[in-house]
Image (cartoon, rainbow, N blue to C red; front, side):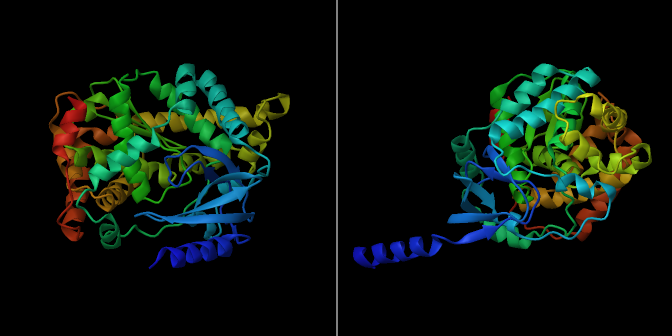
Length: 408
């Protein structure tokens, strides 16, 4: 193709895109700085809003659209233009709150931060963690470099076709109040002591974000932290803040084992296990539009005190559940889907069975009931049974050398 023909085709494609619109079908769709779930959110877009389409980009996990929203250019996932099934539970309304079409990054983050600070104060959590969680972001260039090294010589697209995600109805919670609630709970978990090593934290986030991409989770801003605790444990809070203890990290021998532990926690967030704890206690909540009332009262004036108190009481129960361990049905689901997500990201899922065995034999015991010896035996049983039935690609990796280089 000569240069003149190429230029003509480029002009024709550009003209065809001009004036084309695309409609978002998800509540509070994030408009991101770049084509990836690891880029910062510029603002959120309300459902059924028509956007001017500028470009379309495709990667190994999906497509991203460059659009213009109120003179702000950014990226939305193609997934956000697809319809979801109708919701049935009382918290379906949480995602249907009004989103201003003039909202910007400051107003969105201020709302989440406001809730996080409020709940952090109530729970006696770490206020400094709230600040860090709102500002910590990985460098997109560093992540792309890491990802390129991960999949060198590996066909991620072909692997994705072989490892299918299970079908499920995705509940859309992820409002400012819900994310702020998770931030407040996370601030209490952080009070146990963070392991302050930014390079190691970035590494954990790089691995975790590859799992997030494999799960097609473009609407949640996942961030991963390390706790300075010797006992093996991991936590996930609503809104995507995930913790792994140094004790759990020390038990890992390679990146695949780290990946299955993180994937387990990512599933807890994606399947809304934390928020389902609230739904299970819905009889304690007087208003079906609880989160909408809170989102409309970011300043927490006198009119929101009753609603706020009810939510705080239930949030304490969620926190206790996160610390002590979730229901067995949640753990079984997180184990099964977590292995699928890890394999979809290219990691050997058999690492979960090895990790459970090491946790069970470890002399330092976990304070989480789902990591205690009798429960570990139960989990090893259903994980082994699933691995015998499942068919995963044979060429999945471990990246042992890179893991040791980043953790030693």
